[in-house]
Image (cartoon, rainbow, N blue to C red; front, side):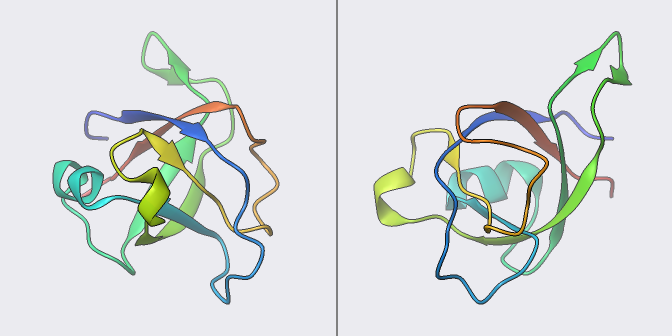
Length: 94
């Protein structure tokens, strides 16, 4: 696992045709080394390197203009593991 980036979960994207997806701005994508369509992993956190919530796999989609640079991510409405206001860690495995 590479160094995770911390984000706050915003309101879900309800009209998206994508499933099991997360929005990331271009800066976050660069830091994580991913592009739209790639897979990232998210969890609520870790203690001493051990995850204390389930890790879920999500596809990357571009951030909404109003979210860029604010460390806010939005999830598609089918992702139920996290709620708006949660702090999550996002990372890659490759």
